Length: 273
Image (cartoon, rainbow, N blue to C red; front, side, top):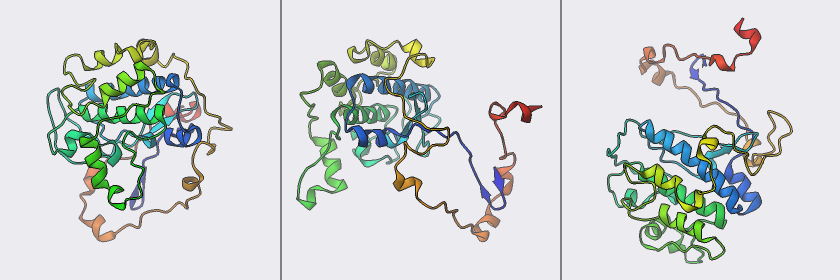
């Protein structure tokens, strides 16, 4: 939608909240729940990879639940497009706690970084904490630099409370060597994930069609309810970014021709007549 000096993207409202919100309430999830969400995320990541896109920002905050409890991935601002099998990129980016070792080492990387981030997210869901949590009073050890050192050098300690299958899949995704990481073999990557013992109970075809029943259904009062979002965000005042006329004048306005678009699938019957 184009209004005066601003462009607006009006997107679907996903009212089930994000995984961060639900994790803060539940602390950690049963393995059955984590398996379901991880499997749906795998399908989403594989879809992006098949389209030549590295996502690069998988984290609890960016995984939303719809009204039925299925996941939707949001926030594609860090995506890298145009990646073919075997291609790499080198930009240093991502959310610190989820950045893969190969990025920190300054190496060229590909789709492998998304599978690492999934391993971190799965660890958080099942263990209730980050695999790189540092509990210390030493301020020198509460820095981003030290976090990166931990990611690069420290072995991942799997909680004994997790099943053997869960421990195995976490070790697979959190392998610091992308060549050995689960999901990173060029020809068999996604097949290797689907056949892993942790996911053996998943009917992938049914899941991809959204025919599988989610293990948790968010409590929703109405389509526009806010109960599944932290009031820290919903109570914030809505403020538009001030426009700068000098900047606007320097922008080639032809780039925005045809910006206004309404998906016909979102129109009501009356509006399409």
